[in-house]
Image 1: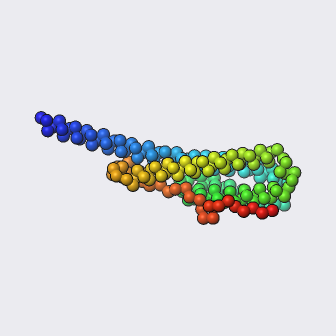
Image 2 (image 1 turned 180 degrees about the horizontal axis):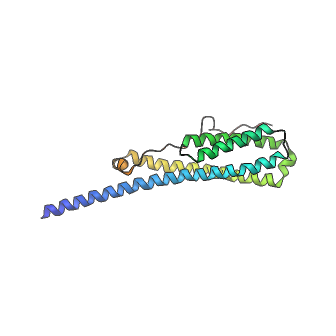
Image 3 (image 1 turned 45 degrees about the horizontal axis):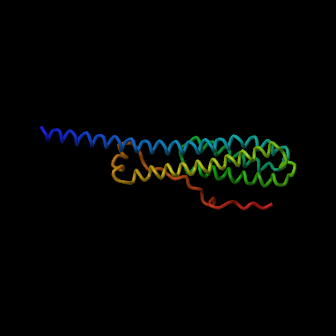
Length: 186
């Protein structure tokens, strides 16, 4: 009788431990997915601001068509990347848009009236705020991914990763050449 109680208790503890491990891994995976969605929200917000910025600049810089076309094309790539789950594609599209915005701001420097325009200043402030939020979202995603990856790689949680359908995730790394601030010259 005592042996059966011990066996039942051990089985209950093992099942309980399995449920805890499964749930812990799934929560970490959902947290990382949510964090990636946060990056998408901020990239989409920035992409939504771009048409307003381009229209504001168009009136002042009509002959800067190539710069405006590059911004528009980069915006489209960000929107396309945000719709998918490829972290590397998101990072590359993000970097391309950031570079085209730097070029657009360089054009704006050549037009003193544009720099004083309230709409342009407001859009620049919104973009700066969005860039800060994108940076925070990237860091939040990488933190959530680090937590998940640690669980997936360590005992005892790694024993439950297959059962939970959880695997390691890629970090959101800056593409090559994006490690330092761009050099803008006028």
